[in-house]
Length: 129
Length: 106
Length: 249
Image (cartoon, rainbow over all chains, first blue to last red; front, side):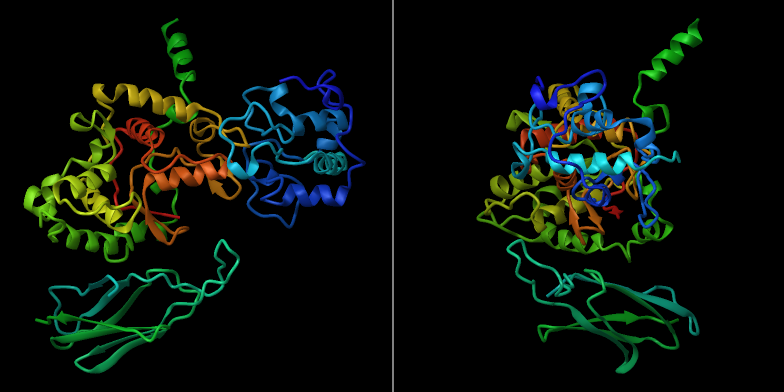
């Protein structure tokens, strides 16, 4: 699976945005939505109104200080390209998957705009936990 | 007739406070759920449970949609004499399931 | 040097295998554990009662009851902990529920019951109850190829989320997915009453839930893949006592 053009990987980042400018409010809503991004099943983070956040993955607090936009974009869109054995889903992938449920075949978990929204929100998380 | 399990203790002495346990098979459909086609599934619950001992009511409960499927209802009574316990479950469809069990007091 | 080799060997095992094998019974609240322990409050016992009725009921063109061939159901003690099993007459490994279906059609000459139907689950629970407390058995040599297929399926990443059973239940057992502690996933209590279902269901129903959860197309009930997974999971759990019919959240 090669990622050409807009999804090109340079170093450990994906510098080209997948859609228009990300919206911080939409990004936060996607992260806390257990059906859309379902991020909090694995990650904890600075979301005081959220309960029962998982502990399978790093805390999202400070993500905006640890990584730049390109790095965040790659880690969300195609995490498997960085770490093949990761449990982090590749949110923009539609190929290289096995036995996808019928309603989701050919569709990425999040579309390009949703990923840009999530990246935009994560960039605002400057304080480490 | 729905499956029912009734548990009445054995080896009961006069004056003992005993626990009667009942289980009945029932979906307890709340009326708030939707089918895959989007239509509301109609409410269908047991709304009242009554237990009488030798004809005298000793326990009754009004049930509401918050009660889970296959309701487990347990209550205590003081065993003074032997006799027949009669259990009644009344449901939204107008049905009444009636079961009896023997209480033997030594 | 020997202790270094031993340490390296232990490190190659999945995380949970370095810890003792545990049933997810241990993860439940005391109230739920009490519900399972008390046969008078366990809703699964309603299915057991139905199973007892079916056991003695003459059915089909043969007008035979299970009891006519098997006698008292207690004679089936030890059966549930060795299923799925290789059945020479079927030339393949079959599950206990599939065996019940075969008896119904071939011996009772009655019309078939579907897998996951109420009568099949009632009898499966009743037969399982006869083995309550006995240790789950490892796979036999006749089940070896099915076991290998099951292992491969267990380790295969699947679905839109691209996750395998092993990634959660071997690598991350004991950690929390949202509010739920990930169990090791041993099928010690099936068929069981799941509070989420408000219903009694088989291990295959539970596996279908997981597959749907990672957005993968589930395998049909009784499919070769499901049978293979059942064999693998039983073998993986070997030694743990059967709790059928269990309760789970």
